Image 1 (cartoon, helix red, strand yellow):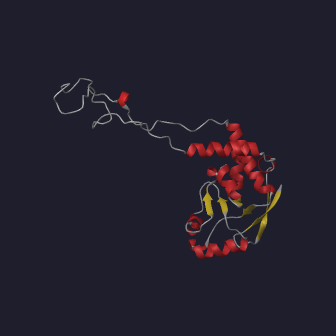
Image 2 (cartoon, one colour):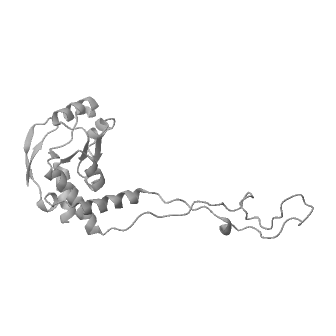
Length: 207
């Protein structure tokens, strides 16, 4: 699959051949759904378990007289009413994650990339160099490219000038190639890859 390459100024900069094994896979909703669920569940932090009455090590000795003491007839310091006692109806430790086969996760990423290529929302740029890292300059570039909510993926590391310029622009996200993931790709209106990103992503699946 051959795709035109542009500059940030929306000028032609040649073309690049995309590997059909990575960018030409027929997307399947069920696979993408499974991978997105797996990603979102991995982000959830499990609740920290509180110590309930049976988890607290305190004396069970009766510490007052049965009658005449003027207090309730307690026989256990582990009761929730005492300082240092167990927590009544406390939070329980829970895990929300589930395993997903590596092959399925890799297939999901290929399908996410392919879905953007298929519907024409994949753009390949020569590089992400922004003059002096100025936000104003980047806003002008985005207007020329007709981009609003977009995910930019660079090579080994993100472009410093682009990262600085895009920091305050709502709807513009930037990731290195190693951080490419199904959830972020699908939620973006447009996917923008650099030449370096294309090379890294194809090498990721062929390595």
